[in-house]
Image 1 (cartoon, one colour):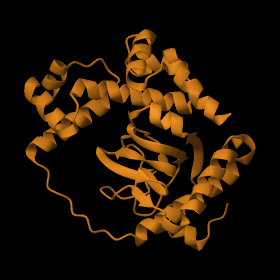
Image 2 (cartoon, rainbow, N blue to C red):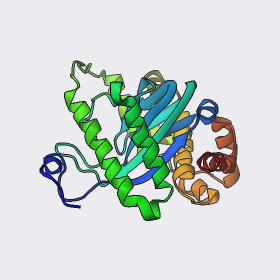
Image 3 (cartoon, one colour):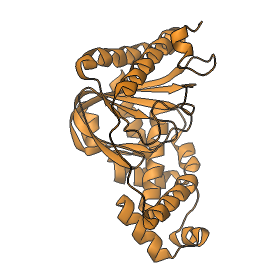
Image 4 (tube, rainbow, N blue to C red):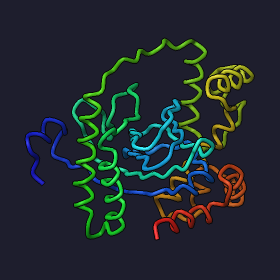
Length: 287
């Protein structure tokens, strides 16, 4: 595909972004099953609220979302969706890789620190139809992948222009030393959550008192460090169950669970049903 001057002014290089996945989540699934923190290292995700309202976490910040909102999740950012705040929530998501926008890191659509929620306003119905059409076409990606890529690119450019026109009035508050330490702990857990971790081992590695480590982490993020590790593992398991056909036993090994039984037990505790049934529930929505 030859790039126009319009595209050349916004994209770095000749590569055209690719749509790699698309999902639809209905009201019943949104209200019953929490989606725990996870991250996509190599692609951007766009989440569109087609109906209802809820709450979404991106990079540690919580945002109220409602019909017509798009949540931008840059590659590498932790994100999750709470079922506790979901009211009649219906949504679509699109995963996009090979995105290189001028002035931004690869697979990023908004700048660091910029609010990731965009209201589509008067064009929310039209944007919703674009998400829905990408979802429908992607079911036959073998034959229609080029059309999905073009539509995803159109979506990106629309959102890019919406972001450019949005006024920036928010000022960032300076971080305290305790918050900076909590961030250092969080970064360590995000890098090592697949490994066998204990609180004492983390404290030794970071040269922080074990009690102080647990206290400031919970104060900053609302949950104890080891519970955060488990929620990260479950969140990543949900993502793998949704986007891949990797066997559940292999997912357990990849994410640091001691056995498939351990994964089944913890997944059921946090999500409300075992991983096999969770994967099947997602497939049932797509049939």
